[in-house]
Image (cartoon, rainbow, N blue to C red; front, side, top):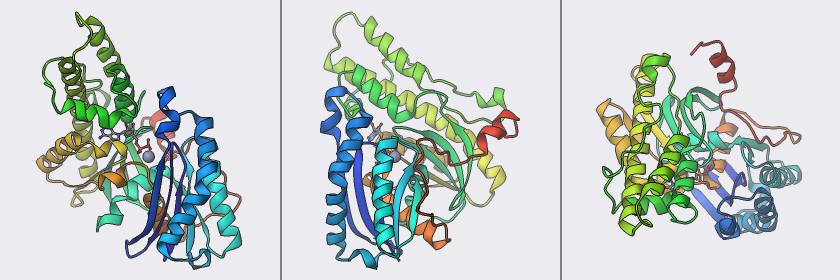
Length: 355
Ligand code: KG4
Ligand code: ZN
């Protein structure tokens, strides 16, 4: 089985050709960082136009690298949501066109599912497993039961964790995108110098079984701390603030994950697997903290390689293979969706307190 995967949900134009022997035959990611830098964040209209300009060439490049023709594809996968609708439509329409002129079925992939399954491309990680998905748009704890079957245990009630990194990095003058820059600055800093809050820490005891996150208060506290410094922040102040911020994020992620590990273990004893994925999982400090947590609880932890954590076409092609294997193909009239939860029943369960 050979599948082409296309990713255009945010500010990376990406494509890849992957087979079911876990071989990446061709892959390319084109970052639009320079197009958006002047605005300090992703501008949806600029992103959609950039995808239009670059996607055809990128697809041609990965097909050439894989040395195959379109009629040798067994499937064409594209991210169909969630994400910025203009970009999603560019990728999905391209996949539909290729599917229409070949016999390869279309696979409309949920971007979160692509992150959730990416670890299985690198090695044997059987279902079920507990997933901590930490990216620029999401922060969720999810039980991955099988392809297409997910149970949400917790999500952020305000900012996503990558968003908190990006906004805080901006406040600290570290530039855009902020996650990697903040991690780098933090490496030289003192994480104990500033006492930043740990939102929702320990909240599970009061709320029963919820594993939610909150990060906007942390970012606000960082802004206040900066404003209270007697002089313009020195490089040392910035490093210490970055390290204090990153330590607070680590504490929150570990606390919420600890609770989810316990919940998961009640439901799936004997399947002690913990997976961390999404762009923020590229952060070495957080990987190490979460790894220690998993080990403490007798869980094996798996994290994809950093280049598979941030958005890419390989994970979309792989999710396409996983869906193709179980017959989950899509019709050519499937629509792109800006919002598309992995666990559509979660909202109703929450309302009736059935968690
Ligand atoms: O998964 P991803 O590429 O896109 C989304 O689906 O959102 O995640 C991008 C996010 C950005 O917020 C970026 O700052 C963050 O991941 N990120 C990091 C690191 N590398 C990327 N955050 C913290 N430390 C990193 N090393
Ligand atoms: Zn992503």
